[in-house]
Image 1 (cartoon, protein in one colour):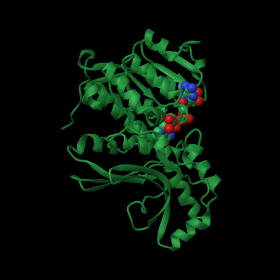
Image 2 (spheres, rainbow, N blue to C red):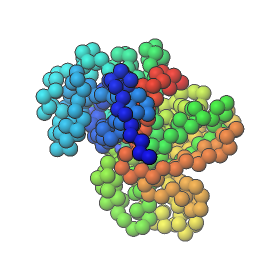
Image 3 (cartoon, rainbow, N blue to C red):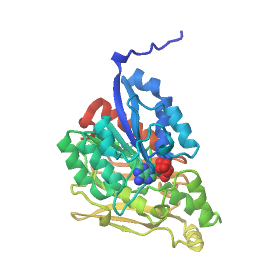
Image 4 (cartoon, protein in one colour):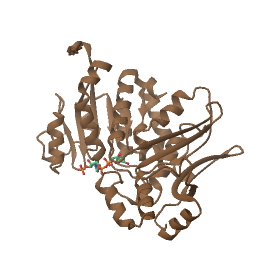
Amino acid sequence: MVHESIPKSESQVKRVRLALVGLGNVGRRFLRHLIERDDTLSEKYDLAFSVHCVVDSSGVAVSDDGFDLNRLLEHKARGLKLCELPEFCEGLALAGALDRFPCEILLEASPLDLDTGDPGLSNCRTALEHGLHLVLANKGPLALAHEELDRLAADAGVGILYSAAFCGGLPVLNIIRRDMVCGEVLGLRGIFNGTTNFILEEMLHGRAYADALRETRERGIAEADPSLDVGGWDTAAKLVIAANSFTDRMITISDVNVTGIEDVQPDRLQQCRRDGSVLKLVATAERVDTEWRFRVEPTPVPIASFLGGCSGWEMAVEIQSDMYGRTFHKLWEREPVPTAASMVRDAVHLATMGRQASL
Ligand SMILES: NC(=O)c1ccc[n+]([C@@H]2O[C@H](COP(=O)([O-])OP(=O)(O)OC[C@H]3O[C@@H](n4cnc5c(N)ncnc54)[C@H](OP(=O)(O)O)[C@@H]3O)[C@@H](O)[C@H]2O)c1
């Protein structure tokens, strides 16, 4: 028997107005997910997302009726800027756009900046001050100012979710925050950055560092500024985000000791291999007595271990907890499709549960 789903009427679905900052690799894939999962969103979650405000490096475009997402994607795929759209508003800032075209959720996917956090951090403040829930793919605002953003969200009665900011589509933070009920994390380590993991593996097989890095940029996995990947800073930002979900003190990126892979030479990789290990950029959160210590550094791990088996495009996380034992989580992500899916997941949770989703 064939089951035909009956489309829901306007009154049966909750319309949720979105604002999206960043229409690059991640932002565009998020929009594609919205188009492709439109029926699932309404049938399964009673939701209809519409996008009313979009921002790229040229500025802000707005649509009261909601953008035609296919047209928007075609426009960006042609390498054009928002300022070349009729909906572009010259001189309009995000705050002005949200005043005129209220939205419920802001999704932030602008480039990572770990010095000032901007433009992401300012956009997050603006969104929270306008009473919007926040979904972050951008790690910068969390790595620098998570505590402040939590305070602003509490004042506004809204939620912040950021599963896309930690290891792409891997729902590890959700597991720590929601599923390890009454448990405590005793330690965590992992390989959080696909770009460096791929480069190290390719170098071991004789490929030049610069050539491997070029491929990660072409696939949209590397940061717009790839020195954040190879310098270990992207990994450090993710370690901060993870640590702030399980330690009792909020840390920032300045609490992490960071060494990147820029100085790793092929002969070091070969020597590790002869010793039965493999060199990986490992992030570690370790409790020494009552103090937590955080570091990111190239580290030899046994080939036969969980992290040693984390190849090229994979990211991996090991968690040691008191009640839930030792858990191992791994994701293969070569393009940011799972990352963008995490933004859909977070948006659905906020749209259906509100602030409760982030507590
Ligand atoms: N790529 C991944 O695998 C991945 C995974 C997890 C998290 N992330 C995070 O997601 C975010 C986006 O990554 P991405 O790969 O999509 O980057 P991207 O391809 O470089 O895209 C960045 C987007 O932000 C826009 N932009 C640049 N400056 C801006 C500004 N001042 N105000 C508003 N928008 C601005 C760009 O505009 P134009 O279109 O005009 O250039 C572009 O649309 C980053 O924070 C990254 O760390 C990425």
